[in-house]
Amino acid sequence: MTKVLLINGSPKPNGCTYTALNEMVKIFNNENIEAEILHIGNKDIRGCIACNRCKQEGKCVFDDIVNATAEKFEKADGLVIGSPVYYASPNGTLISFLDRLFYSTPFSKHMKVGASVVNCRRGGNTASFDVLNKYFSISGMPVVSSTYWNMTHGFTPDDVQKDKEGLQTMRNLARDMAFMINAIKDAKEKYGLPEQQREFITSFPDGK
Ligand SMILES: Cc1cc2nc3c(=O)[nH]c(=O)nc-3n(C[C@H](O)[C@H](O)[C@H](O)COP(=O)(O)O)c2cc1C
Image (cartoon, rainbow, N blue to C red; front, side):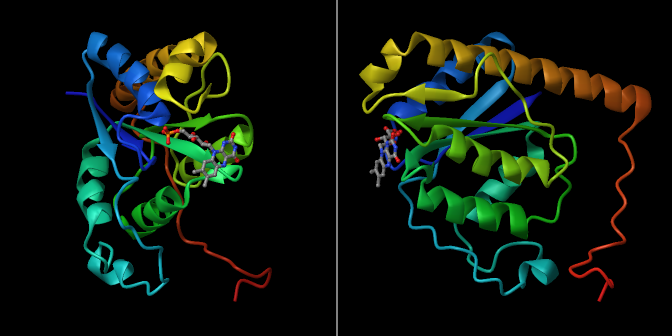
């Protein structure tokens, strides 16, 4: 069965970010897609220490919710990252989580589809949205779009319920995501995955 994993980066389990993500889940349920919202924002998640042990062990040296999520991410066809805006950025706990999740996981993310969703009271949403989309676009993951940038406004879930366009954007995003997942599944069968060359990792122009 097709699966989408939705990450709630907010410390609040049922806050504004959840309200936006849950609007997507309702569409996934109608489209027969298994959807799970994983709440990580209330966990004590430290940042990456660049020890690079994951390159040998295939998982993060800190055995917490990051490694548990890696198993779910590997099985998922799509990933949605939801974040509240803190000082015009995604919240810090979520960034620590994502740095370690994307850096430590050895499996291919190629053609899993990704979407990010941000909620703010007032501003800093597009800057946060840009940060989150970069996890996808360095990983060979097509980024799903909608009828507006994927954002809702509010300080409480009731506020978000009043943001009719924001919720509409979430519903359209989920429909587009379902379509892209299905289209990519068909295309994989018809054409196979495109080749990804990996032989070069250059940090300086002379290749050293
Ligand atoms: C530390 C902190 C920083 C915040 N910075 C911003 C900000 O830059 N712009 C903004 O509009 N709202 C800001 N807010 C409000 C949050 O974006 C808002 O409370 C949150 O998106 C609500 O979502 P949630 O219920 O899922 O946590 C901030 C809140 C906190 C706690």
